[in-house]
Amino acid sequence: MSDTQDHIIQEKPLSHNSSAAAGQVDLIGLSRQELEESVIRFGLPKFRAKQIWHWLYHRGAKSLEEMTTLSLRVRDKLAEDCFIGRPGVANEQLSEDNTRKWLLAIPGGGEVETVFIPERDRGALCISSQVGCALSCKFCHTGTQPLLRNLTAADIVGQVMIARDTYGEWPSPRGGRLLSNIVMMGMGEPLLNFDNVAKALNIIMDQEGISISKRRITLSTAGYVPNMKRCGEELNVNLAVSLHAVRDELRDEIVPLNKKFPIKELLDACRAYPGSNNARRITFEYVMLKGINDSESDARELVRLMSGIPAKINLIPFNAWPGAPFECSSGATINRFSEIVNNAGYSAPVRVPRGRDIMAACGQLKSASERSKRKSQETTPTNSCGRSANPYTARAFPINS
Ligand code: SAH
Image (cartoon, rainbow, N blue to C red; front, top):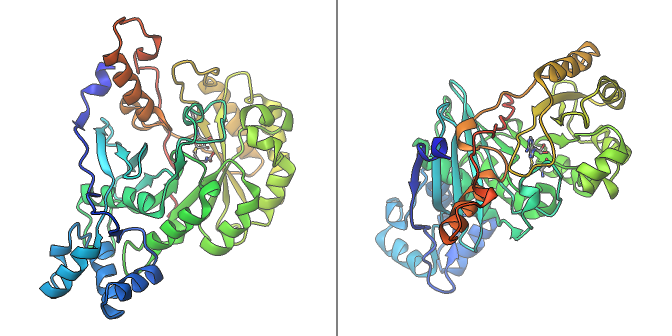
């Protein structure tokens, strides 16, 4: 693990900005309407909500004192009733390739990961939707962690605020911002926490604030069919679907949610996804597992299944984790798979691993941090969980322009 520790920027006691007195309201994560209602409840005129929104999400104010267009009296009044929350940074790591990963302590309890993957002049922030996950996908390390709770809208927006703080992207720049895209591909299943995810994404998309457009936001689901339509209708963000297998028998096993919503039902929901078309395709994620789902006949079946769906396929080299029951397919197998899908007319790029040295893959920083906490409490040094992190590779994320 020495590799990783070289890159730890901070490992410090938590400093989340949630030291609110009982009954105080966190301004972060309120919808515009809720903010207006709160402002009125605090005894202030409604128009103050617009000013506060601007300070929170355009200027990135971390304290009420910064809100200098509000009179001292108004700020004092607000200070009695509310505060501006941020998740606490429990750990932050920077990879040699500049991928940055935060382990964030959520004010209500629990830790989640957020990862930023920069390109030359833009970058994608991968955010989490739940603490742990209930879906138990067999190849996913978060799947080994029980679902502790849904993140609130404030927890979700807070991940973007921390990243923006880090890159100094306040006030919200009009163009040329590094943090240009959002992918909901961190810990958890976003469609099982739809209301909070929707509220958070509406805040993130709001043009008088963070202002990241729906075309630059991708939500990834393991296939919780009942909320796919709502996702398209209410948010109209790009959809990514974690397919990973082309036969129900195998998908039932590696993505157990398939037992409730089998492949046919899932693909029918994709065909009906509002807003998808040839210019705006659905991304199908397909993790390459050696000898499990990577044969040429799997590739041909995948092509058959895609018929009638505006689709692109993202082939993801499997990121191994300690005790994982799978291995990654060989480079030659992945290339052959990609070739078959490509020849059938579908784009099928292979994701380039990023953040390899900091374990920038789902659930891994959290687990590594828990392992090291456990290790320091143990008397025997032979805990197999604490083995070297070198075999890790990391996911990279699609950036839609
Ligand atoms: N629950 C959502 C989002 C979180 S996972 C979903 O399932 O889509 C985001 C993506 O990372 C999914 O495609 C998931 O299958 C993939 N993934 C998880 N663990 C992985 C691993 N160890 N190697 C490669 N991809 C992985």
